[in-house]
Image (cartoon, rainbow, N blue to C red):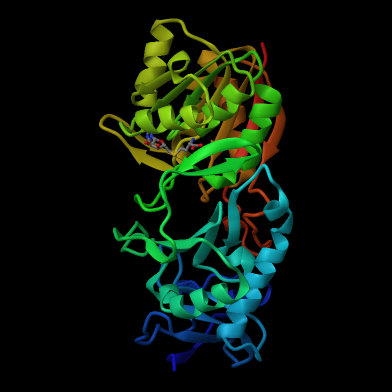
Length: 398
Ligand code: SAH
C-alpha cells in the first residue's frame, strides 16, 4: 500500500484547485508539510475538511505534486491509468492515422490528467519522461496499464528529476525491442533522425510541428533563411524542403554541426549548399553586420535561459534586444519568426517585447499569424502556465 496523507489547503489555493488548477504548491498548504515519501497519495481538502481532489506527492522544479482527480471515488490504480492512457490515444487518433506524420506527443502531463509524465511517439517507439521521483514510484503500474492499452516496438524513458529537474544519466531502454538509431520518423513528410538513448534530447522538438509545416508550405519558397539557436536544424530542413534558396543555421553547440548535416542528409538535401555555423548567435549578429548580410526570413528560437562564455541570455529580460538584432538583419518586407518556450511570461507580454523592439529600431511591423502549442500537447485552461509556447510571425515594414 502507498502511504496516504491529507493536506488541507489555504482558502485561496483551495478555491483555485476546486476550479481545476492541478499543481500542488507548497505555498498552498494550510499547515507545514509533514514528513512525506515521494509517491505518497495526497488527499486535498479545504480548511473545513471538504474534499477537493486526490493526487500524489512528487517534488518537482515547480510544485510538490499534482492533483490527478477531483472524484472522491477514483482510486489511483491500474484502471485509473488505463483510462487516462486510453483517452489520450483516442484524442490522437487522427495523428496515428496520418501517414505523413510518425512523431508527436501522445500524453502531455496535466493536460491529459496526470502531471509529471509525458509520453512521446516515435514511429512505433514510445518515450516516457518522468518529472519527479514521486511519479516514478508509479512506473510499474503505468507501464502495465500502457501495455494493456497499446502494442509497441519498444519503450524508452527519460528521468528528469535530479535536484533541478535535469536529466538523470542512465540506460534509457525500458522494454520491448531496442531501437536502431538513428530512428527515422516523419513529420508532415519531413524526415528526422532520432536518438532515443543518447541524453535528454532526442533530436527534434515536437511542439514546433505546425510552425515547421507553415514555414515549409508558405514562407520558405525562394527565400534566404537565417535560423538562430538552430540545434539540429529542424527549421532549416523545413525551409529547404519548402524551396528556400539557402538556409543558414547558427548554434553554439559543436554537436549541432554533424546533427544538422544528418537532418539535411536524411531528407536528401545537399548540406554543402547550406551554411551551418557553430558560433554564439550574438557574435554571428556582429559578423553579419560587418559583412552586411541580410535575410528574407529570420527564425529566433532561443532557450528560456542560456549562459555562454560572454553572454547570459534570459528570454524574459533580453528578448527585445534579440529582436532588435534580428530586425537589423532582415530585409524590408521580410519576416521574423519569433519563438519562445519561456513559461514566465504570456503572449501579451511577448507582443510588448515585439512592439518595443520595433519602436527602438524605428520601423513598422505587421503581425501575420501566431501559434501556441499544437493539439497533441494538450493543455488545461485552469493551468495556463502549461501552454508555454509562443510563436509570432512578424513582417518587417519600412
Ligand atoms: N530551434 C531549435 C531548438 C533550440 S534549442 C529547434 O527548433 O530544434 C536551443 C539551442 O540554443 C541549443 O541547441 C543551444 O546549443 C543553443 N544556444 C544556446 N545559447 C546559444 C547562443 N548564445 N548562441 C547560439 N546558440 C545557442
